Figure 1 (tube, rainbow, N blue to C red):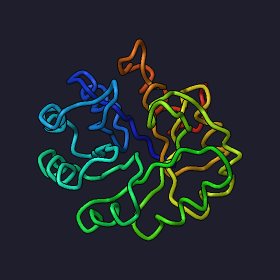
Figure 2 (figure 1 turned 180 degrees about the horizontal axis):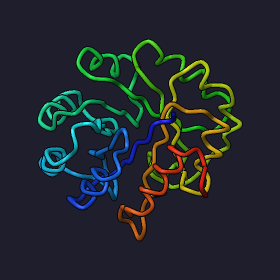
Figure 3 (figure 1 turned 30 degrees about the vertical axis):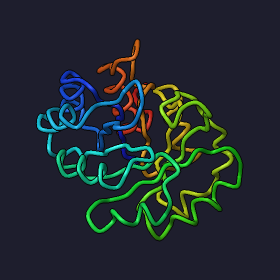
Length: 209
């Protein structure tokens, strides 16, 4: 079964929502973003989180020292790098954490870029290209550009996924993880009904719709 990550948690209410519905992963954004949290707030939220849910810290071109400090302070399980980090940079953290590297998909050249990171990361997250923001844009990309790649690589799929297209995403891409943010929000805040609906859809595979 495809796993679910809910990214961009900011409030105690968000933690209560995920604790009730139990996605596999939740993400905390430490980069410049409308969903950014500082390490103190993230730790406060993580301390309230159901221990069955794994925590992902999202960073963009951060110094190694700051990443290490935040990851240790918050007790993160996984580090997700969403900028121009090199394979060597990613590999530096791999002795202690699971490492995800995000890639913006523009064309079929994506596989060539992923190959450079294969030995230093555990999963590649594929998101829509947007020159203004590094992820979280709510935009979908052409999934045909990554057709068959889930057979070769461990993939997380992000970008404009919501309850209306999630089953199509699973069928066409067959990702290990679906990464959701704006697709489970209403007016910029996490929406429990949307979270619940999406998780039920994945578990049921579209039954009882």
